[in-house]
Image 1 (cartoon, one colour):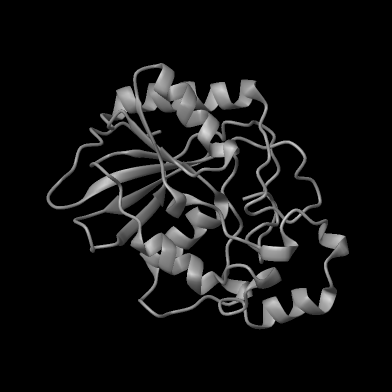
Image 2 (spheres, rainbow, N blue to C red):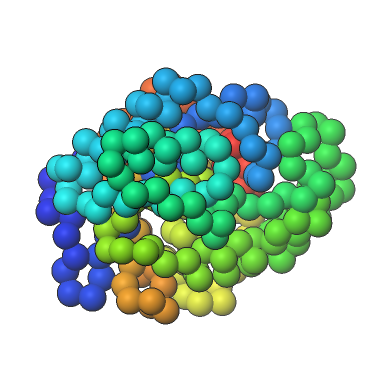
Length: 225
């Protein structure tokens, strides 16, 4: 990571967001709210990296995670080391409804095609549409300046879209980028409550889970969010 103070300048400050470690049992499945476990060694490796970077960058010793264990377990480790750990439902991954946890090969192809045709408005499996995910991400605000987030690929991609596109501009499937690698960190720029996300940049070094595959994502869950 580049050296910087990490401290707020003016009314905005950085909010580092790390993708959770690679979970177990995700291969070939649609994973959103399905609560998959992670290898404790991977979780510990990411927690140590966050602790090290927070000391270097001057970030707050406050970590916010989703309720899902693949993110929450990292927060619990940091809490043992004196951090404050907050669980925020708004940081949860996209809800794929009846699709969630199923093998992609078992999901009706006509439903997948309908999603691709109306990528931002369609609610996969009767769960959460991308427009709803974007609204949820836009409403979230870090509790303190420079708080650290451990979250999910879909949430991070939604944050990037909000930070780089005009309000009300909805993505098509072919515009949706591939997800960050497991353990990758993006810096969001956050302001006062109600300001929303104003910038995003990728500042990670090598992904924490070396060798983890990063698949193309015209879907939020091409690799487990």
